[in-house]
Image 1: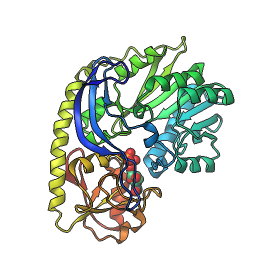
Image 2 (image 1 turned 30 degrees about the vertical axis):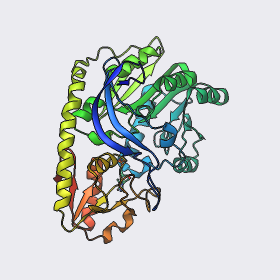
Image 3 (image 1 turned 135 degrees about the vertical axis):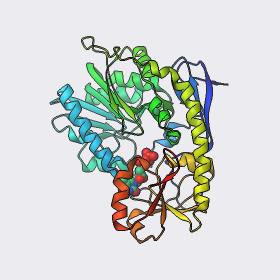
Length: 391
Ligand code: TYD
């Protein structure tokens, strides 16, 4: 019997991907996986939220060694530039102050050129890039306590922004209180998060790994906002981000109209959708394994994504089926994938690899990767989403 991290009500287990290592904990050769967790997500009816029931300590996940860098993807860089333009236009940020929490390499705030920007970011790889971009940062995870210190040093902010951060933090109440601590009374809290009904509709079961503690609905965010004396004033749909995301704009300001005119009745089906997606995931797990076994000449992978950890570990696929994975991220090259210990090799060497069949793990970036790589050498690309198929 599990209870909700937020309200304490019983939570019903609906997804189970077995024992999993931390998805972004790439290992040095010879190193052992330190942390394993039960990848079980449960549904809280009261909060209308899906949640990981056995959450690894967040400081083990987001620490100085966290390797993910947004600047590795042109798509994400483009997205954050457009986000900056859109926020500047809507809120007239000239001369204002913006705090980005979990800023990664500062891909959004670097474009707010007439705004004073400050980042909060604990990962060393990201901090090096922030320094190169001259973006000041707090080297820490964000909590209510840290927010008090930031407020003392830097004062209040007209905007607090974060992307793909909230879903990873089990103690959301503490995070919201921290945001309210540093946010001007009339300020806006803007954040982007994957939208659970879309993830489920698209069967993106591999988005379920320890960094995605919560699967949000708009109803859930609306309830959280009210709990903290805020309201949703705008919702932007971002269909191409992380399987389908929503950008929420929240405020305490009285004079802004709330977004209650939106109707979210279709969210009533979310619990049922979880079961449907799980059935689909079981099929992909079997089909993917079979497809790899049929590759008699062996195969290699491209893009050591965090989300592939869920499938590889759940299906027990290691280096006997995929001998190596090519990737351009400096912090991943030379390491092994978590749990399954597949070597990660510099993608600069990919053109010398004669493998005919290649598994494309970042299927979300296929338009960027396949034409570019096929121009160098024609390949057969094996993808596992939305179902197992060749491209
Ligand atoms: P990403 O799409 O960010 O997925 P996740 O959030 O699940 O990690 O991961 C993309 C990975 O692919 C990342 O490790 C960088 C790598 N990559 C390349 O190696 N070459 C490329 O051209 C691109 C676009 C990405």
